[in-house]
Length: 179
Image (cartoon, rainbow, N blue to C red; front, side):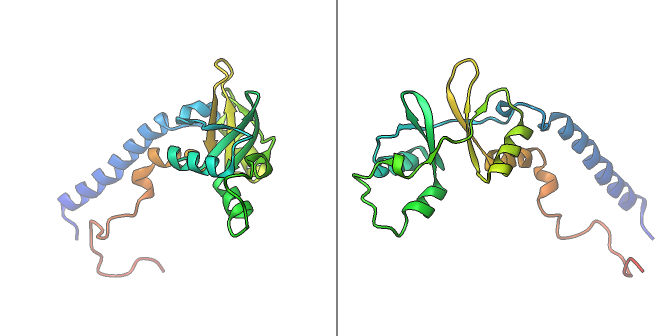
């Protein structure tokens, strides 16, 4: 049979994880929280008259997966890594002279800083895109949220529950469980 220490260790492990999970749930994001609760990044902005080469260089420098394109200080488009792959790669494009406005996604969906995470996810899912520009309701600064930002935020709270279990169980069994 099992010793008292083995049983105590297993009970402590079970109850210890439950209480940690309850604490995490209290601190975790809720889908009704606004999108700023997950720590979004300020967007990289570039004028729509910029060349494709300049935009790609800006993406590399900022280590950004998307750029918000502006005209007269208003969002006119968005350009992402997906656009590079689908619209530019393997095509004869003059990176120095071609303008980004010919390759960007025009008039992207825009969220407000007060919108909820659920609303952002719904927009992304329905629209089939991974990035959405956000305009702050007070400062009018432009930010961007990605599907990956939301996934990372959720993953940070539940990291211990997501990673693999240890290779050895606490107890050994002499026979298979189940029927």
